[in-house]
Length: 88
Image (cartoon, rainbow, N blue to C red; front, side, top):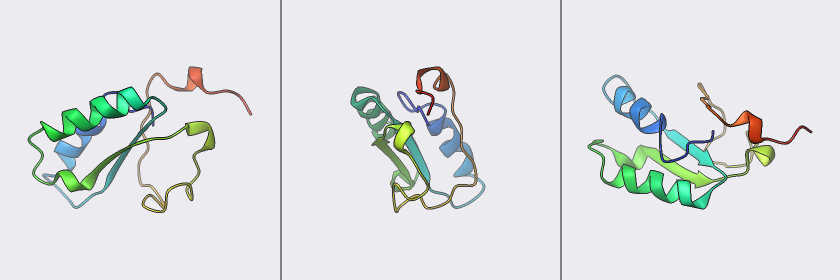
């Protein structure tokens, strides 16, 4: 959540690809940050880029059912984001 230009998502994906099957989703409110993350993914050395997805999402509206590809999650990471999320 708040993936910005793709970190730490791409580092996590690189480490997971050595040990197990995975799907990784990076979300950010900024379309510019998602474009940067997708660009970094395209130029990365990941062997299976189809397992990594970056999408523009307002985390204030994100639920487990917001994206049918996501469903449930085992791990969620976020850094430097919560101060920008409006209290509900």
